[in-house]
Image 1 (cartoon, rainbow, N blue to C red):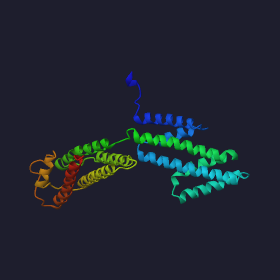
Image 2: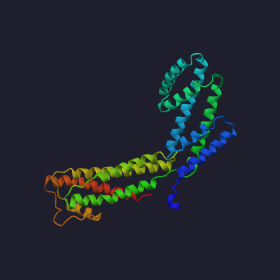
Image 3: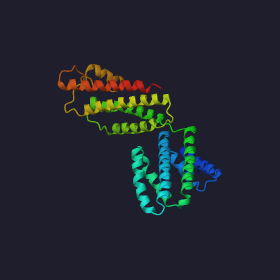
Image 4: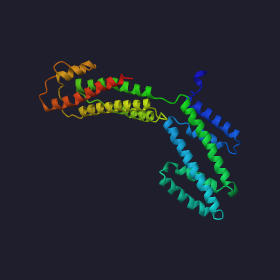
Length: 297
């Protein structure tokens, strides 16, 4: 029976709690439209704290500008409402661009029009109530996001780095020992996913702590090493004539589990040997650095 029930994640629970609490607070203050408190709570409950912050800024900027312009234009153009709405949209968009708040343009325009279409004598009160209720919802959701186990994908990033490292010897065996051309699309996909997870991690902490910033820099360094490693592997796979690994590189390959057949290692004598030695040496250096970094906490 338990298997038939859907999994309920923490974010789902936090969203429900934020909506309920926001509606309760809006009801306490006697809000005429508590739905805006619920909308604010839903919008602000994002996966990362950085995204939650951006959602709050968008909502507050959009509603404040839209409400202010709406009340102003209802007062000035009460008898020419539709002309006033058109002029107001132009002025509002220009204001958002001037203030570098382009992200708030759609919401600001929607709030502006909704206020302009409301009765003139109630426009100011509607503006104040909407801003107050939305602020309640945003504040509740942001507080819950910060206080109740913020999303943390550092463990997922560590797993991706470990899996990447574990995959490399197999590709080297195929290219260097077996002299074949492996399909590197799997490693490309792993690093693409790693970059996505790192972007999420960098937006997790709000306000940003020093430790989180240092961890983000450290993980970005690991990603750059992984990118350098993969670049060298691509270079090896792009060689038309495969060289022979030097005895030194053959030993380094054996240390990570890549067994080069006897008789293949040789002192570089051809151009292909030199080119292969260059790329293989860089790859093994990056692999060693990444292995050392990935073991650090």
